[in-house]
Image (tube, rainbow, N blue to C red):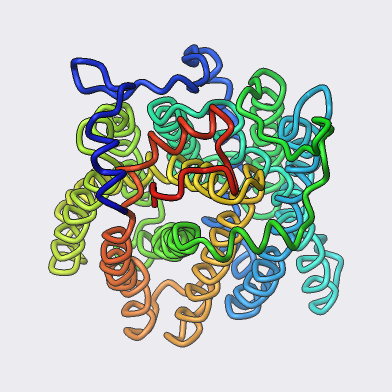
Length: 483
């Protein structure tokens, strides 16, 4: 950044006497009902995503009889393939023009199919042989991860950018979205084992449970797709104002040559790679604390503080800024992991550690979507190429690959540790693998996240960038001294 811009920012006429930035180009302030309609979509998405991440391996190992290593490999292959379909889907969203908008129709119409496929994944026909079961699982999981969840999630995530360009509203949307997500995670991880047991356990219990979950997946997403509005839509036009299709390779070029985009996609990948504890929680409760129902306590400790913290996150981020808030939170998270490592088999102190960790991760959780939306604005301002959908598609690719690696690493760790499916007593090597996935591996990832977050320094010039976008200074017409 140049001295010229620093002086300009200091004397910005768009700053009022209280020092609060006022952008002439900001979209209208969002009403709470629309924020809630948007947020409930992530509640539905997690009844596919978190449900699969938390229970797929144990369902496949203990009910279907497929090894954790095979399931982990299936997931990893699908997620890597999924990364490429994410890129394609982002371009599709950016080139969609319908009465519903660019992203909303994809959110609405893919939701019921996603619910149905989630039901099918947890209802592997018992009449199939071992090879046929693996083929069935591979096909259904591929359709979920690579096709329908991709189409739905890329479109849903990009709504953060399409709905508003206000930093405050974007952080608020991220907070509300993840409050609903955490409520879904809390419900899924707390009640699933009880619901399965209440319906008779075994495949019968999973069938009844997944009927409920399929509906809880589809309906909230359809509500989100129907009731939100798209206002902040950038289009590429010719000299006559006619909308032009944005070439795929042009979008990839402007994204992959922007340093802030590379930083953001790396953060996404690491954030989801960190979450090995989600898939490990049921094993940790079952084999370290000898009671699967303790998973409910561990889940409450992880999610309830996050839900409460997310209510205050927009104010925290507004006061301290995105980067400073995230770094402070990650320091708290690191302290909690040290505590959990020391007291890994003490339920009370481990639970306290999980509570502290959940609080520390709140700023990152709330700000992540806002960061992506801001980076989309930066790239549009610099290149003149609208990338509101595509920027979320590539970060979604980071999420999918990170999550795929996460689940695969859990499966591989259990296999390497000598995990015996269904056994009441596990070898010490399997217990070590469980502790590594619950505590030590996430601790390492948080350290890396903190280091990378220090390089995220765009906040000092993003207000002026949005101002120039509003008055049409994008691409070659922009003021190049801003960056």
